[in-house]
Image (cartoon, protein in one colour):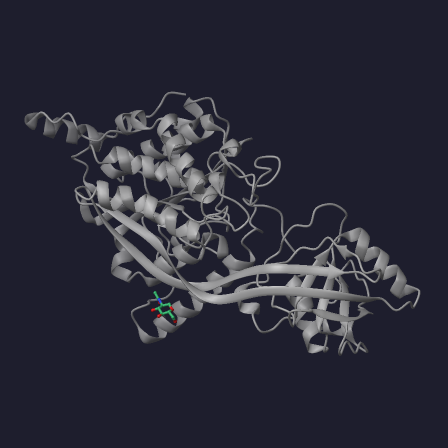
Length: 493
Ligand SMILES: *[C@@H]1O[C@H](CO)[C@@H](O)[C@H](O)[C@H]1NC(C)=O
């Protein structure tokens, strides 16, 4: 398929500006041509280097995030200050880290153990040594998730042995606490690697410490309890949970109509487990390279606003903070939002998220990818990234995503999400598509939907309360449903 032509509006603009002989008028073709694999590689080399020299990650609350922020600011603010107005938006969130975890079996040997996010600490330095108490296995409803499953169980002073699966880990831990347990030994529901769950920041204070052990070990201990044997084990968790400040970067062109803003964003944080080069160094690099190229151009009628979001991996925290703080007036000025998260997966599937408002924004992405021989999968928006707040506000949106987890990105959320975890052709083609789509909308909103009005008016007192409750619900959904979206990995229960 042929790449799209410039719109009528651009053509008119080109004509009107020939008088002043501009050769730096923005066109989709020019901005696309400016994006090179080599420069995208340069950005990702820098982000990888930042992780390597800051404890292996670029996560919220960690030094690698601050260094990533400074890296973007060095361009957006310091070098390109003549073209862009940049502001750093601070916000707070609960930082959490398990510093140490240990489970010692009845034979005195330590077993393999995994800690979820927001795991509270046991008494230290010794941890808890106690008998296991049997919580009946219920693979259908999930074990230990409902009050009736705990009937007659007095877990006071004991560690509860609970099988994982079918229902939320946090619910199991809440009930264990209510029934007096000192902690939970959670055995994985299937053999093989243990996927790390998050309990959610709102579980703080409501749960007991937990160690997640392999299926085989749990099944063995369960069999002993079935034989009425006493099984005494030790659980040790050393963790911290505290408020930390973090930041979004918002940067916009000096030129363009402030009442017609096109936004483009990616998240700047990684998970604690690794450097986050595909997730989301890839989107960060695309947005930064588009910014780098755009400063050379002129003559586009709309304002372009770039965003690098903080604490996405903790539940879309930065982008939801931004969208929930906008006034109705500011919301109406944002005519489109593009989100780029994981656009260089090593075994890419080219997924465009869109709805009936996306129009030209999604169409330009699709047509360009198809013109480059890529098979495009069109779908609805998932819940897994920073577009959620914009979609909630009814703002026309489009997203690109090349897949998380096997088979698309086997290093998803792991230490191996490095420079080796990128398909450079996919990243380059996607970044070029993003450049084209942005330049198209910078020049014309033709074929883009109007904002869908939301049901509450944040200006009125009652509306403000409803808005507050609304954003609270969205944030909770983002935190718990984060990996459950069809566009992300499988449900983590
Ligand atoms: C974050 O919390 C700290 C400590 O409570 C406070 O001093 C700071 O102003 C907060 N920052 C923001 C952006 O709310």
